[in-house]
Each structure stands twice: as structure tokens, then as C-alpha cells.
Length: 180
Image (cartoon, rainbow, N blue to C red):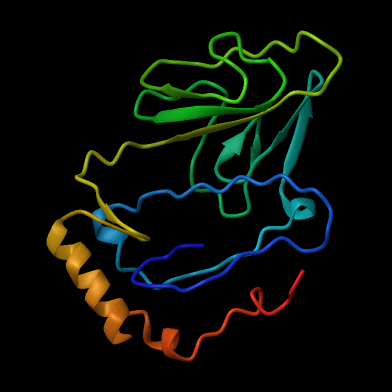
């Protein structure tokens, strides 16, 4: 989902099965903050995947080991290119040599993640990298902009149902009506 100039949404898991999810909110560059909102559902079965030397990589965005995502916007080969910063989040197992399971490592220029699975249990982790924006960030509730004035304007737009929030007045979540 790209929130852009305004989007209203709801998310709820379906069924009674235990699920695992990861939600990343990525700040848009100043020049892209007011783009048209967009939503793309990405089902697990549709995520491009590559397997090499017993390691399975699912490519959600960008490229890894020669496999590109569905939109191909970033490039990654395990090491972070010089202009990127990133993070590694361990979901299960004790695979990352530096850092603890279920912790986040913040990576910067020249860093890399070395992975070693020390037992028979599958290990899962997420590696994210991107070009640093080097812009101010101001956040209030669900709104993320570059200045306090832009935050005030976004809140006003939401309250007045304009500039991307026109449909919010009549929008009803189908998720909240499902019951559990």
C-alpha cells in the first residue's frame, strides 16, 4: 500500500489459524508524499522466490540472487550497496552471528549480515535496505510528513474529507463486520 496523499484501510487476519506477519511502513521522499494512494495485495504464493545453497529467499521488493520482485524497484545481493542503509529483523532461530534472536540490527554503509543456521530448526529473518532520504521526519498518529505544518494540513484534510480522504466519510470496514 502506498498511502500517498491519503488512504483509509483496515486489516484483519482471516480464520482461526495462527499466522505470522510483518508490516513495514516506509517513509516516502518529500516529492512523493502526495502521490495518488495505491493498494496492491501480495499473496504469499505470488512472491518471487529463489533457492541457493539451501537458503530460500522471497523477494518482496527489489532483487536478490538474480530474482526480481514484481515491480523491481531496489537491488540487493546480500550486502548493502554503499548508498543504502537497512535493518535485519530475526523472526525465529539464532541464525544471525551478531545480535540476538527477535532483535533488530540497524545496518549502515558497508555493513553486511552473515547467517549461519546452527541447528536443524528452520531460521527466518528479514533483510531490508534502501536509499537514505536524509530528510526531516515528523509523525503524528498515522500521519508522516516533513514539517509540523504539513502534519497540521494532513490532519485538516482528513477531518474535512479532502485531498485524498474524500471517500472516508462513507467508507466502512468490511473487516470489522466479520465477527470472530
